[in-house]
Structures are given as structure tokens and as C-alpha cells.
Length: 431
Ligand SMILES: Cc1ncc(COP(=O)(O)O)c(C=O)c1O
Image (cartoon, rainbow, N blue to C red; front, side, top):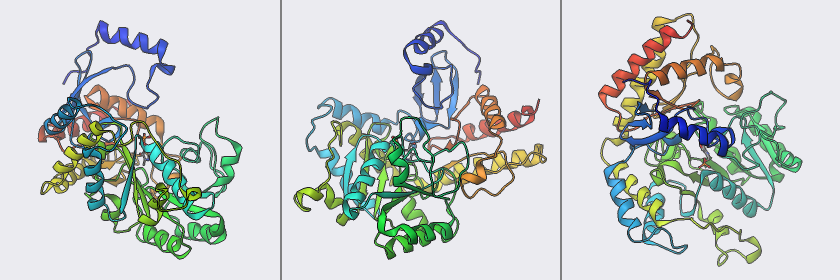
């Protein structure tokens, strides 16, 4: 795989991008200075013709690889019938029905267009249900880009919790008081916090797998028990884990059922659609015919449940139901996750590394502390990671700043090439 082609068209586009897009980017941490032209299966190509094995997967949606023929066909046949109607349509109804069948907590589904919207409206729903304002989230937990989600997502300094830090300018001061922040996997801290603030809390939101950090034994169960005890809704943000860790997502995989969950990425096969799914007693707040008008939340979106994205989602879910889908996916991920760690242990035993995560989604940290929450990743060597990622990119391995997302379309050849690239990059890392 050669990755040193450049060409005039790509350079011209990058120049235009520098002028018309802030920072010359779409705002995401994807590899810079290349423009993606196309994707097929586990591979993508830039405009200059360089080919990459894709571990970014569009930040996760492309679990089934790019241009999957069944998804393309489903999308094409819907586009020919019309793209959006702002009205009930068959695909949206059937996709909601499939989510309800798959997801333990889901009695009903409300569609939106992005994960950010899904978590924002999940929080609004639990506020309407509880008639309280405060939210508890976990330091380092990612729930999109709205004001409440951007409290202590990636704080640049560590302050005494439960006070959170806004991740961005433009977040009103008042939001700081509405969000309590706890360390992931610290059940004692979280329990005490809930005991102290239960009367003001609207809900608790957590990624069951926080980025790539696994919940330690008993953490999610303890969180479920204490929230249930005080009747505080527990929201699982399953935008990454949904239909990726298992067909029923993180709640099936870890065996804990929340009250509400948010979905995106995989359920729309690469199209803009996301969802809030949950127990009827909370979902009723989206229904003015059930709760009184003053208790019904306002939530409308131009593209919510649009039939093209829903067609892609339905076609994706059909494939995920094939026997052995998750067994094969986990097998591929496990081999790469292990190979990454083994390569460092064999070639650079003096370099401390950790490779936390679950096989469909894991990452590398240059640190020697056990990774249980945001603070244990805080002092990891990020410069070294950037260098390692850029050595991989030169060797045809495309990934973001964080996470390896594994696609079901990875071939034996892809796996062998990736392991070979790990070896070369590890050898060159300190040179
Ligand atoms: C766990 C989680 N929640 C929410 C979001 C936000 O989704 P979106 O980027 O579609 O707004 C993301 C996006 O990566 C995510 O990983």
C-alpha cells in the first residue's frame, strides 16, 4: 500500500478548505491534509489515490464497512421514492419497532438527527419526568456537543469533583450549577453524591463503556441500584455501544437495564439519524395526549425519522441479525487489540502501554496506571500517541485521534497488514 501520492486536485481542495472552513476542517479530529474520495468495505481512498484500511469508520457508524451493497440498495430504492416527508413513513415505523424488539429498556422510540440531539432531549425528558433540573454525568463521558454534555468531557485541569468545568467558551455560567460530575467507576463517590443531591437530580447519564474504559465489576449494577432507590432515571448513552457490543447494545452486553438510552451511529448505517429509546413512563413525556400539556416536552426536527436514513438503519439491522455476526466481529477486534499490546511488549517492553476497550472499539494509551476513569488517562503521553498514529497513517492505517473502530468487513489480509504496520510503527516510534 503506497501512501505518498499527492495530486493537484487534492491540493486545490485543501487550499479552498483552508479559506472556507474554520481551520480547514469539518471540526473533527480526523487525519488532516487529505480529502477522502470513496470507501468500499474496510478500505477508503483519498483523492490522490492513496488507499487506507479504515479504523475510524466515520467515527463509528460504518460498522458494516463502506458502501455495503444491501444498504446502498435500500437507500437507492427509498431515494427514488422521495427523501423526506416530515410525516410518518414505513421505514421509520419499522426501524422503531426493531429497536423496541432489540433493546431491553425500549418501550418506545423518538427519532432525532444526531447523537447530540438525542442526549439533549433525553436530558429534557428526564427533567420533565422528575420536575428537577440537575444532571449527574461522569468526567470524560462523551454525550455530544450541547452545553450540558460539554461539562467536563475533556477538562484540561483536574479540579475537585463534583464541580465540573465547561469544555468550551460560550457555555453559560448557569449550566455549571446544573451538572454534577463524578469519576467513572467510583461507586462510592457516586453513591454519596446521589444520596446528597437526590432531591435536586433529574437524571444520571453514563456511557456504559466510557469511551474505551470498561465498567469495573459492580459499577453499573451499583449505579442502577442507587438510581432506582431514589427513582432517578438512569440514561445509558449507547450512541457508540448500541448494536455494536451486542444486538441489544451495552445494556444486553453488561446485563443492566437503564430507564432511557440514546442511539445513533450504527442504527442509521452512515446517515443522519439518532434516537431516544426508553421506558414508557418517561417516553410519555413526548406524548401530549398522555401527560398533561404542561408536562409534555417540545421536540420536533425537520429530518427526524427521515425515510432514507431509516432505510439504511433497517438494512443494517437485518445484517447484524445474521448468525455469528458478533462472534466474528469480536474475533477480529480481539486479535488486533491483543496484537497492539503484544507488539509493544515484544519490541519495546520498556514503553508502558495500555490497550483498554472492548474488541469492537478500543484504544492505545502510553501510560502505566490501570485505566479506570478519565483521571487515569490524564497523564498518558499524548504526543507519543499522535506520532504513533501518524506513523500508522503513513502505512495505510486510517484512524482518528482516539479509538480503533473495528468493521465486520476487515479481511485476513487487512488484519495481517495492520499488525505489520504496528510492528513498523513501534520500531520507528522513538527514532
Ligand atoms: C457516546 C456518544 N454520545 C454522543 C455522541 C454525539 O453524537 P453526534 O456526533 O451524532 O452528535 C457521540 C459522538 O461521537 C458519542 O460517541
